[in-house]
Image (cartoon, rainbow, N blue to C red; front, top):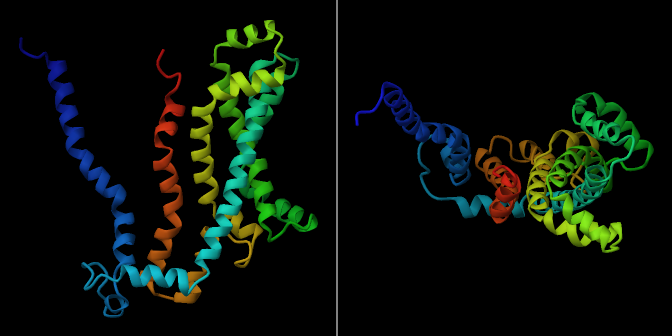
Amino acid sequence: MFPTPLERTSRSWQIGYQSLLPVAVIAWLLPLLAVAMFSVKPSSDFTGGDYWSWPSRFAGFENYGRVFTDSPMPRYILNSFMITIPTVIGAVALSCMTGFALGVYRFRFNLVVFFLFIAGNFVPFQILMIPVRDLTIDAGLYNTKLGLVLFHIAFQTGFCTLFMRNFIRALPFELIEAARVEGITEFQIFWHIVLPLMKPAIAALSVLIFTFIWNDYFWAVVLTQGPQAQPVTAGITSFNAQFGVAYHMLSAGSIVAALPPVLMFFLMQRHFIAGLTLGAVK
């Protein structure tokens, strides 16, 4: 049978999109590829005005070695891990408990409390810069890793609760009812029944929150200063003063700063995709 006009049109559009896909991928990756190429170029290429050609020699080991030896980059990376990991644990743990309470129990102000969590996600965080900074100063938490951890946990719990509550509402409620009939306590229901079923959602949410916190720049600059507490996103700005127009060093530092969330995603890719797509198909 000959294809209908609608099928021919659909097929032509499909072929057109497939031909544009490599172009779109290259355009999306072009800045990253440029930074990666800059990071392995020797300094002589930049002093000679040779920016966009292939490196005259491979200087990757030299550039990346200097990032770790001639700058506080190891300290900044350690600070980022000390801020990001406790934040992920705290936000996900709180959201699991609040999501369980809002998703399982039917109490009078359930929707009101849930809407409060949702409303917090729509507050522009830029307008909170001055009061949050003053609050951390008054509490003695300014320029400390603990201050950033507590702040991020407070701000991320709203989104995490929204995510977890909707996930728990999609679970089969008959399991909880059967456990209650057997006389199992509510904490045991949460710990032994609901929490194991939430593992894909916990993995997906952990990857998202890890990426959000690791890549945060705004609050890292507002609430910290100096290498003793600054994460890598804020600390890498000191490269501008230390290395000036040494674009190869700036690029190498940027690649190093971007590697942990990328590795986190690839390590958790299977769980991340399962957590996002679970329940999408009946």
